[in-house]
Image (cartoon, rainbow, N blue to C red; front, side):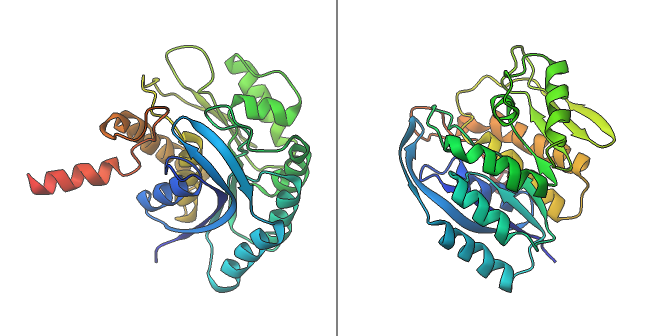
Length: 272
């Protein structure tokens, strides 16, 4: 049977991030995508110009209705927006046994804030303890801890360990903000730290990479892979999606990754 993954996140009408990216990434990685919206945004590849939040009770109703009818194998949580939505999501997932991947979306690529300042504590207290995996970038990790952003591998690993003390079973520290030719990620679990190396691809088309990675990880967890294998498979998928992103022509700012690059390549091969 095909595994089911529920994404709880905001909408990106340009299709590169948020619930749209989640659905694409989950589908491309072999699972069936379900979706509950937390927010509508007005955005394109150049930035976010508006945010309209879904009432917390209705966010909870979406999630509850899905869980009442459909077996969910994994949950990905993205944009939460405010403290009330964070509490509503946490309460609704209280009895859910599915693995939860939490991507603590705080700021959009163009700089717009997507998580209200007073919501950080709610995310920290109500959602982190429920996560099988937390996937912060370096500024997000620092914000959750109230520390300066990590600038070295040693600081990345130390902050990953500190975040584990807040409750998640594992933490994937994403190193895309580090200086240098590589983009290393550090997976911290109870067994220690594991590094995933990846050369940096020079392209402006990296909109939604965090959403895409966390959703791909959730898809592999839903299919029964362990966290280490799920991260490795998801990183390989995102690496190819970024490498092929310039084949798309979407906007004039930070364009999306090519979520279905492998499928397109296969289709072209079939026609050859």
